[in-house]
Length: 279
Ligand SMILES: Cc1cc2nc3c(=O)[nH]c(=O)nc-3n(C[C@H](O)[C@H](O)[C@H](O)COP(=O)(O)OP(=O)(O)OC[C@H]3O[C@@H](n4cnc5c(N)ncnc54)[C@H](O)[C@@H]3O)c2cc1C
Ligand code: FES
Image (cartoon, rainbow, N blue to C red; front, side):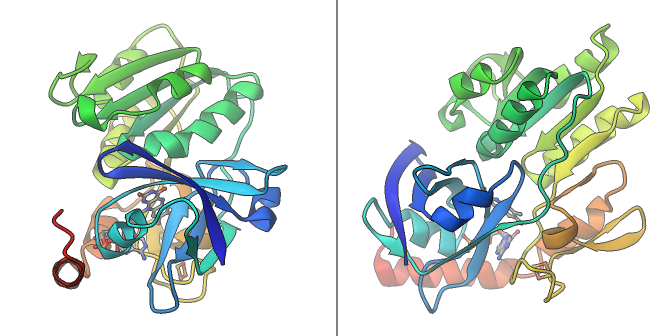
């Protein structure tokens, strides 16, 4: 069993768990993920490693409540345990001195991009971060991201905080400026990653995205996480999750992500009716 050492509610439906997992913490690298299972009847879900502490033997994950498993997870607290915690999985993000790197994070992905931005800066890159959320209430870790960036631009879709608009707008301005952008890392909802890649494509700036298809085993055996990149089938869990955003078949990814929408909806309704969860 893996003990939850700390739970923090970052915004109403996004939570942070620090979990005791010394073996995983020893090997974690930026961009990798874990697969967790709450109990022996639970489904396996992947979550990105937001931080780790080898000395303490802990891994931090940040997750958004979207369906049954993430709602169940959110009902746990400090001192509770989860049954399985497998990782680190996936290839780490490629870190190198590129020059100027723009890190674009949408929603809860600020937690995912933090270790990447930190590692890029430690490698000597100038890091410009763009952090976007639908509204002010869904924004968190602005100061944390600022602390690992040379510059940060914050956007909200509805203008309730900072700059009104989508992350692609300041991204395009940076690409048009004299800044000289050498690489873009975009992580967030798939639609956001697709449009970041579409924005950078005309400028020829390599853009890395972290794909999030449905996964089961997370170790390359089931084929569930297959995506098409440059016309070649790849398994996100072992060949990714990072890929060149200009080469991803986004329509295939969107279609595969929607495969079980009806079952997921029914599952959440059933769970909420059984446990009385009003959300
Ligand atoms: C490599 C990777 C890293 C991820 N990191 C994070 C993270 O750090 N924080 C976070 O909040 N979410 C992350 N996700 C997404 C997270 O795994 C899903 O939100 C979660 O599995 C939803 O499960 P559910 O039962 O709550 O929702 P469901 O109602 O079952 O599903 C809601 C939606 O989540 C997706 N999903 C469902 N089951 C899975 C699954 N087994 N694997 C992947 N996606 C699934 C589907 O698109 C689905 O439509 C990551 C996904 C991947 C592939
Ligand atoms: S999750 Fe099974 S092959 Fe990737």
